[in-house]
Length: 116
Image 1 (cartoon, rainbow, N blue to C red):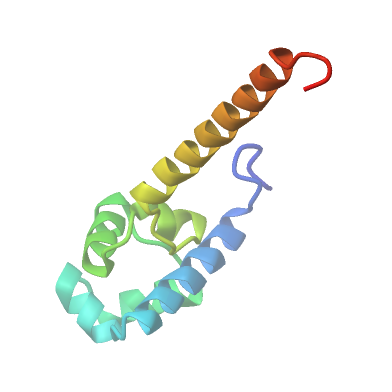
Image 2 (image 1 turned 180 degrees about the vertical axis):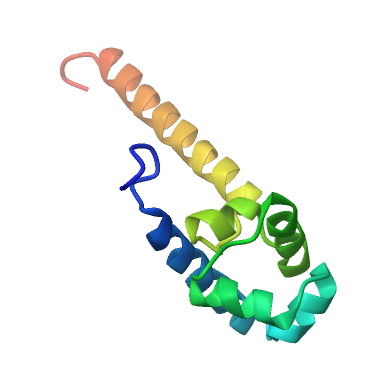
């Protein structure tokens, strides 16, 4: 049964987690054995996670995220992209600039006299 909140079955979640973990490990050139040794589990445990047979507990999910240098949520949601903190600020500044520009244009039109 699909979770009302997460919109995914447990099996879909496990497969998604395994796919995401595998993709990130490949991108970072980290082997199953290397990750297993780093977080204190067997290589077979990592293989099972990658195959979607099961998923790590909270503690091991945290360790995986630290070793791979990604947020835990990226593993859970399947989004390995890191958020750029400056990108959000830049987007807000651009919206503010647009609002100011529109306001100045609007105010300028209000102060125009006929025939200008």
